[in-house]
Image (cartoon, rainbow, N blue to C red):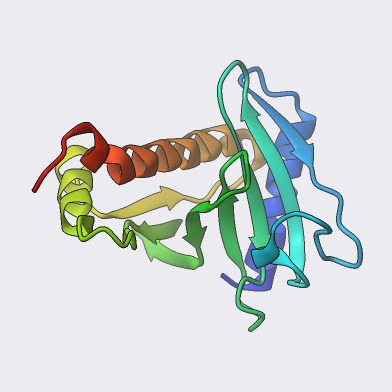
Amino acid sequence: MEKKQAIELSRLIEAWGDSHSLHFQLDKLDSINNRLENFHQWTKNKPIIAGYNITRLGENSYYFLFIDWHRNDHYYLVIYTQNKSTTLAEIRQIVENNDQMELQWKYNPLKRDGKNDQRKAYFKQVFGATTIHIPLPKNSEEVEIFIERLFKLCSNRVKADRIVEVFPLS
């Protein structure tokens, strides 16, 4: 996504966070010179627009980073697990669909166990497609549904990644 799109999304998220959601808590991450300090080795020295720890109250939380992931002036929404061990989504593409701007993300597991085809098949069967579209919020009132959809994407990603543990397939 373009830098201006990342700035606009982060602005909307902050405005939403200031409105005191009943279902989520938003904590903005501190940055120094537009860089995160001591977050994760993959983020070291990469330009960041903003970063947040977003918690669904009483449940799970994720880190949302608007970051120049490859240091090429293309910004991503990168979503990390709460323990920062890995990313669940690296979303850079914004597409227009029926006059609506949407984030586009494709489930593409890269595990090294030879079972990625089974993960993809499960994801597609259960969630309808391997490519997910999430409409961008147009104002702060639409941010909560946007965040809900991103949480769902992460949950579905985790389920698909772990399906071979639940149903060992040969």
